[in-house]
Image: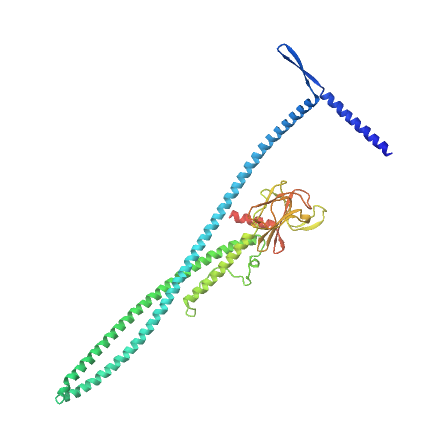
Length: 445
């Protein structure tokens, strides 16, 4: 039985080979070309192999020239279009970076000016304390001088009485007259010195009082300037905080739940403390205002860090939505299911870009996702890019904004070429379309 089958197979193959050979002989018979040179006639034989190789070579060259020309023309057009789009995107991104740098420079300048004014105020407060201490010392000296003057006046009255007694005794005590007169002159000179010192002390007191008043006026003006500066900076910071909170809220996230140590929900406009008699000293009020401003600045930095980690860009340049986030009918079994991502239709092998800077935590095959790239953007924000035809990054690699991480494909559980785009915050999935719309709001503004 087997031998019969083998014979039939050999016979069939022989028939096929015979037909092929017959067709080759018919299309490429052996030919002779007559060549006449100087009256002599020669025949040049053209074999079947030479004819077949010549025909195949001409067909291959014609096909290659046609393919190369078409590919060259189409590739030039695609490259020109992509270069124009990349140039526009770079210009927009450079303009945005310029505005951010300007805002950072202005804030740094205001912070430096505030620190300098704060140092000047502290030095003036110390000088005021020193002058007040000197004023107290002068007042003590004036009291002491007053007591000495009263004592001298009493002594002078007593000496006058003694002088009368001495004058009565001068006739009998002529030998002591010169000595008593000398003592009287000495006492008078002492009284004059004491009176002069008192006048000098009063003048010094008046001068110190004027100086203290001038310092108090300067301190009041400085305090008012400081309050105005702190108020301006606080309002500017509050506006920045409100703008970032608006963008984060558009993504569907709660800014107060994302920022650390924010149980009390600090923020809002700055309102300077009143100058009533029951309030604290001006420097205490300024310290409280600066403490409030510092809290606002810390919140602004925290919100800015969170915003920088949010994937606000679209991972594809051109796309259409094939399946939204949320409840849908499964495309494979047509049963109702929850879709934790956004399916974005695009051309096969279209480039896929990162929506924000981060670290690649997975790059390769992952179950029903097929070829998957997973990026950690910090602050608990993670983005996923699934069903890729090719992965262009490695696990642990640091990627910047708009880094090409893969090509659109249909690997894994997929019905056609598309990108499964997924975003999670602290392990909970979020609607990626809200992030894309929030990014449009930012860059439109």
